[in-house]
Amino acid sequence: PGQMRRFDATEPSNAARLGLSLAARTWSPTVLPVGIAAAAAARVLLQGAGGWEVVEPVHDPTAITTLWHRTADPFASRAALITQGFVVSAVPVSRADDLTQPLLRVSTPAWVTPGDVEALAAALESLASRA
Image 1 (cartoon, one colour):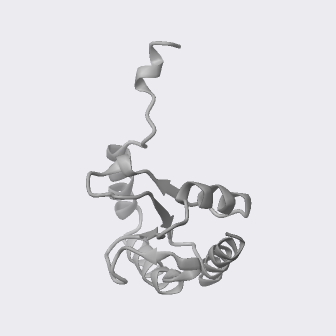
Image 2 (tube, rainbow, N blue to C red):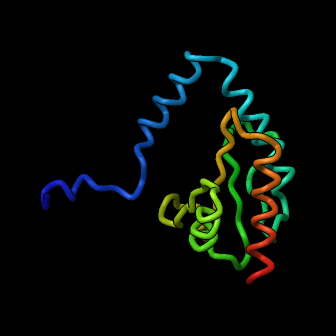
C-alpha cells in the first residue's frame, strides 16, 4: 500500500478525459454540440446567481462552465451543493498557474435540462443568502 500511494493523485487523468471526449465524438457526433448549447444556456442562467460570476464567454465551445466568487469558498459551496444533489467540482489554485483563487466548475452533459440549471442557480442564491 505504501508504494501505491505515489500513484495517488488529486487530479483526474487529463489523458483519460481527452480520450473519453474523442471517443464520445465517434459514438455520437451530436453529443458535443448539445453539451455546448446547454453550457451556453447555463452561463446565461448562472451569471450572477448568488454573486457567482461566469468565467467563460457565453458561446465558448465547451460543455463546462466555471464560476468564481469574490468571497464565497468554492470548496464549502461544493460540499453544500452536493448535499442538495448537485454534482459540481471545486478547482484549487494549484490546478493552473493563472488561477489566483479557487473556482467552482459545472459540467453540462447532453442530458441536463433547463430546470436542472435553474435549480442550481436557485441553490447558489440560497447559499448566498445564508452567508
